[in-house]
Image (cartoon, rainbow over all chains, first blue to last red; front, side, top):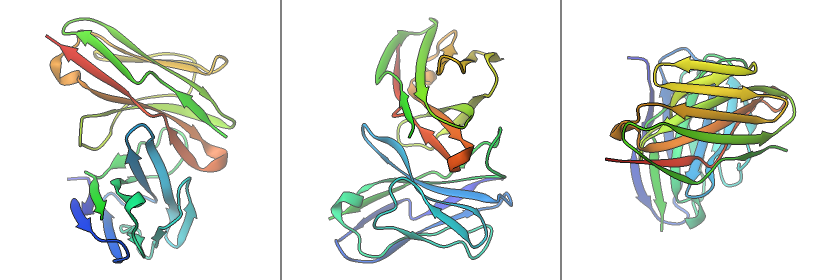
Length: 114
Length: 110
């Protein structure tokens, strides 16, 4: 089944404890992106990647890092999480960018930072 | 920059028709998407418009007017399962991003 898989789905952690949210897609998609979703603010892009080894900042990149060493994987790293990073995170991918390329989203990762 | 506006919440009755509006301001417009998102779940694709006019897909239709910076999603024969948030998203190729509105929460009552 074509899908985007995120792990963990739920995580409660404490301030300053480094964590990684993994994202993997099995559709050979070139474009991948991370979003966070907060009440009243909608989906906001954190980082995106047009292809392997090509990443760029979205609208809210502060406090996050990403890497794209392989086409299928696009992990999101929080080096020193803070409470304001408590949010619902979505990874998404598409075969390309522009035109009618449709984003396929993962199921989401709900992160709570205490 | 980009600005996308859509109503926060709407209510409708089962079997009725509802229209969810989206207005946007952007440069380098390269299409508008509508996604459906049930509470706590991932957004799923509904429609894509890049040219002016109406695109119909079963009970759902989407309209675009590029000159007015306006789109709407029309849902017919509403069902309870249509209760969800509907996200309008504008693609800006120049900035390589897809920007989402804050979403419209639709509540369908019996």
